[in-house]
Length: 306
Ligand code: NCD
Image (cartoon, protein in one colour):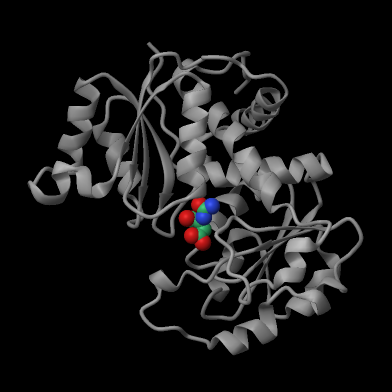
């Protein structure tokens, strides 16, 4: 029997699996694949708020014909009755649940669930650690735009240190041959990131003309005990706005994993910019999650080399 696989971060996928997943998502967008997950029990456990990821997983599961149960943390015996997450996982598996989608504020929590659950676990974001399906949808959006990402320059701006999206997407971009540049103040972007094989740049204006894609990030205030820089300083140095859009090269695009904060990392002119790809990212999210669900439950549709 095929070992049950989970997706905790992009490292769980081989190079071939990663590119397969991206093309499978494109296939699903072209042609609705029907009920590839007919009758499979899926449970979504979100211990943190979510609009996009939660809705997107639900739609992906429903389009594939899965049975869907959504459990909010307050609904769980875990919350008040002393049950451990391991015992919750065991209980859900005994009911025949095949897939758990988990979001949690603690890094490593989803991995813990995966060790206890006899089924597939998909990480929908664990603390500042990883968010692999967001990375896949970002990669898919970039590939739609540029084809191969080899040699393309992708610039992340903002609160990198708390961004599980940046952590997972950087991993994927490096594997697909893109140049990754990280931009932000020291408190959001420690020098240690240079060890990831990326460039660190403090001056947003200087790097903008070289970017093929700029990925803006929200400042994750909920993960700071006190804010290291004022909003006014951040806006002055790192907000993408009308003046900075003038510096961006022709054909360059701007992305954001959402939720975006108007007046902070971007102003309204970005939302009207021809290269703004946020809606495309969100749209791709559903197809990418369908591809992940299908891959984990049914395996690849074609033989993939090592
Ligand atoms: C983000 C997340 O929750 O990691 N959004 C998302 O899933 N698309 C980013 C954030 O909260 O700023």
